[in-house]
Image (cartoon, rainbow, N blue to C red; front, side, top):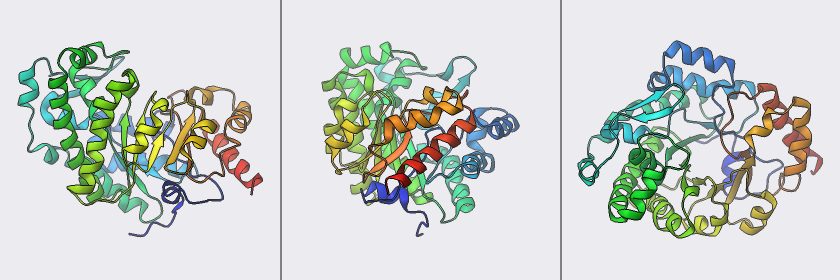
Length: 351
């Protein structure tokens, strides 16, 4: 299928554009009243994820409000561990919790290697439903949590500030953690390939907790496994779809990420976008990196915020406007509109 709006795909090839493509992490989310209504109808977040009609509907909601250049699969980064038997649930006030976390080496060895993909068919059904609704208008981004990020939750049992249990495993039993990452890498390869078969156009690895690691461990564990995923997609499945890496808190690792053979990298809000764009110099696309909390400012403050931070990059080849992390539930939808309009205006002024 030939996508009509090629802006996002062109940016991933670092081609010159009149303005940067725009999409937003968690663009389908709790800041939108229509999303809240749909989620309430589903009964729970996981029910929403598993219902192709409702999940594809919430994926469409921001596309109706805003001039966005890509859609993104509506799902969760922790679907693979859930399908491997760890029993994911979302607890009010706590977030994701696994009822059967990894506690021993035996638990790692017992993780299934077959039958996981079949339990994730609901995800591929959402992709197919999205493609039917979007048609050829926009590219669809598919994604997975990175192997390291998945391992963090599987070893910890739930989200925490520092994932001390997971990191203790890394220092005490690096061999066991590496075995877990290798198992997860293969599952992520097959999962992303199946999303591609269902109709996504771009693949993304969310390495949310890569920034917890020191430089050596990041390269040896997190980045190594992401590189293995990219190689597996190319070699095992013959896929040439662009792959993006978002390692939160790892902008000092830009050179290492580029070496992983990705086509784009995401930056959180702590990176300096001008510095990174100059460093990358067109070798890969760069996505980011507006601080999500900036959109909590009064709406009339949004334009100067955007102008002060992105005026130097909006016309540079390979730049993709996005946030440094997901949209927050308290975000005013009008502030999102103002941010998008400002990016368009800045690019037009520089034309």
